[in-house]
Length: 350
Ligand SMILES: Cc1cc2nc3c(=O)[nH]c(=O)nc-3n(C[C@H](O)[C@H](O)[C@H](O)COP(=O)(O)OP(=O)(O)OC[C@H]3O[C@@H](n4cnc5c(N)ncnc54)[C@H](O)[C@@H]3O)c2cc1C
Image (cartoon, rainbow, N blue to C red; front, side, top):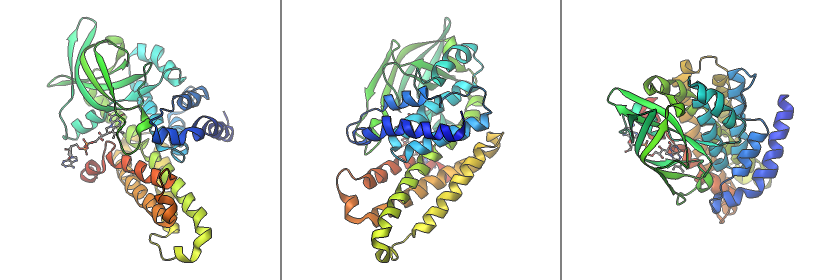
């Protein structure tokens, strides 16, 4: 599909399936499943006949466009695309031939429970799931505190320890025997992200659901994509905040002269981050840009906080009303601080 037509189609999907539900998603923990399915049906998850750089740019753009209206929904898209990134790197023929097409069409949606892996390899956390070899597969036990984008017909990606020397990455459907999910909706934002604590009691994973038996080699390959795709969450929210400041600016040009930071500085900083993000996405070897991606991920987390805070200052009393979009963006922006790799983790890495 031509890029311009693609953008028009995406905006139609956002207008029809997302905009009417933003308040419900934010205030009533409404999960935007119809929106995700519509994005899938629109062909936005498929990688068929495309260069991987073009796939990355398109996927970043989808997250960015969605985050302009609702970071919760953009994060659920991140969850699905992050799972796709893992499936696409798998050498398992069952995953390539049978599962990947279902996820790429959006007929089946997926989550990604890999923050434990990110923290484990950063030396911050023990491995939360253990795997035991059994006939034709593995059994998994343990628990994950938060995995998003889960519903009764969804799948998700996990990381588990087999022994001291070996760790594996697998996928599984939510409705398997031995898995219990507990809904989490008491966050300050993101409650429509369908986030669950997941408890595994000897859950059987057949070999055909194993993405990689060499997680130590697999995680460094997928990690740059996971971090890169988090950056447009902040770009979209920041763009929306800047647009809102611009609208209000016309009414109070004199008063706004005194507020710091000035709008033009925020616009320029965001443009630099955005340009870098798409530049990395176009790099053939994403792994070689690992450090730069993490630095940019840190920059966008800090910049988004600065921009949404500025929006609160520029908007004045309007922003302090219940249900204000400005305050929603302020709450949403703190998710970027707490999503792995968190600001605390990134500060040490970078
Ligand atoms: C709404 C929501 C949805 C989520 N969805 C998912 C999901 O879909 N999938 C998923 O896998 N996870 C998910 N998470 C988890 C998320 O990605 C983070 O892992 C989690 O929020 C990080 O919390 P933490 O307190 O463990 O922070 P971390 O910063 O990761 O800290 C871990 C521990 O290490 C310490 N620490 C961190 N950095 C350093 C440092 N540099 N030096 C010394 N000590 C350090 C911290 O103090 C803490 O004790 C979700 C979380 C939320 C809130």
